[in-house]
Length: 111
Image (cartoon, rainbow, N blue to C red; front, side, top):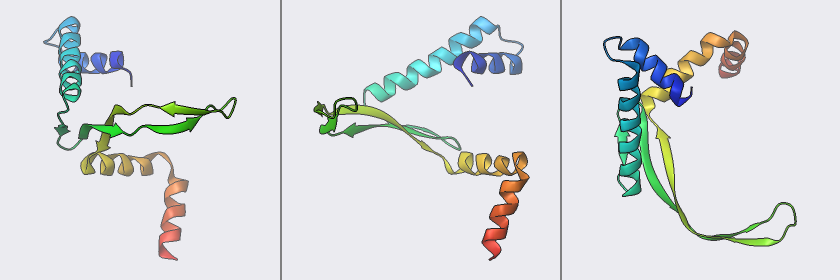
């Protein structure tokens, strides 16, 4: 799903709010999340997951084309950890799409 797809879905579920206002709401949520991560705050959305900023240390890498060593500077990077409820919902829906995968894993578990 893309950001525009998300806006479309929210607009469909809230017919009393214009699509333009829906876009403003979605953008405001994302902007608030970005601002929180910029200052180092952790974001937790119960049942969905959490976002936080992790520090990646400086290291030596290699240019894949030449094999030459390259210095990679330390940086802060956003990290998402999926929540237990979301993980379970996604895993449950997997069985709905592919019955052969489910039967294979069930056969393995009983052996």
